[in-house]
Length: 383
Image (cartoon, rainbow, N blue to C red; front, top):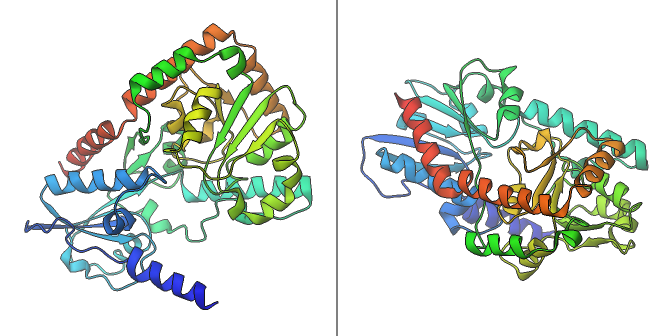
């Protein structure tokens, strides 16, 4: 217990402490970013794209001559709102500014996924599906957000959303203002030249039998249970699983047999995209399969950028164009239809789709494009 308390205090006071005037500038305008402080306090790591994206966002605002303070989205400490000309982000600090206004403040909501009301509804439906199937309630394997902070998705001056039109539609029911869509980024760990070579050299007769699930927390939310149900009946196909299995102990216990006792299901747990295993999986697998019920882009992009073909639901908010396959729903027959359709495609055609997936992702989702597009959106909002 003492260890847990110490860990909590370290997180609160060191890893998540507010950051004031990050660039030590002396401009006439002040901005508060309500998002994550980790990359500003500790530097960038490769656990999530939001690390580098946060820094790129701050660089844009610095170039627009804002002094920049950063707090975590769940920060509950005192904030002097009189100081700020603009607040960007989401969460408690953004919502509280509407209760503490003595001046005009420009507010921009930053949505990193679908609307929280939509997300909660969809994830709870999936949790109920698993209960009906297994007799176990596993809410910790959903993505339930207890605080929906409805003010931030109704009263702000503008919204910037990660994802596509599917994401935008989830907000339009609650918001009639300006919405701007922004492509999320991927983390480049393999050069484009090497990624193309890997894809061109790949044996798609074998790769079409190997599927990768690559995701973060919320294993039910992201559809892993659906894939386990399918692949345990298909020993002609291989499923490779990369995600924080050990952190969701009830899910692991409920699906232990599927996760560890089937020769065609390979459970690796969480892996770094900088690891050799990640590179090996990019060489071995033909598809990234991700039946999520609500995303803003997902880790799928990191795999698409290295030549994997996406098999996803619409709710993964991934543009599949002519190089991907859509899973129509969350039933076993939907998974069956999508995968059977995928493996029936000729190997030469699959290689063409893989190269298109790779090139499209690297052209439209690299971090420099992210920064450039974000700059254009902010310029538009400020005008």
